[in-house]
Image 1 (cartoon, rainbow, N blue to C red):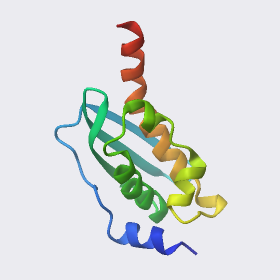
Image 2 (image 1 turned 45 degrees about the vertical axis):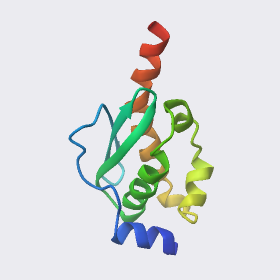
Image 3 (image 1 turned 60 degrees about the vertical axis):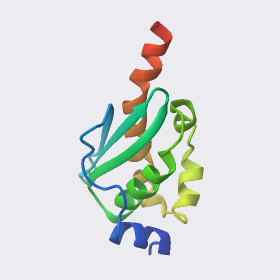
Length: 124
């Protein structure tokens, strides 16, 4: 049902748990099934230095958090906001349409965390 990548990351997720030094946070929820996802980032100026997640969710959401936080480390805010759903789906080895909400939860939390930073740059 799931790719070997999803199974590996769901069973042994990386970067799972709180990030006490987080400077940006975003969360999302998929009400249809009750999945909840939170993303915490530590930024140094414009670069993501650390990324961690917490999830009360299905295996694909946990896998997306694990893979997504790996992808984010070292990216600038602008680069992170350019991640595409199709790119993330490939990283996961392909998700069934009914499980693609995992990607949307990740991207929604990412945008919630980073959009205030983009807005404050526009104002400053």
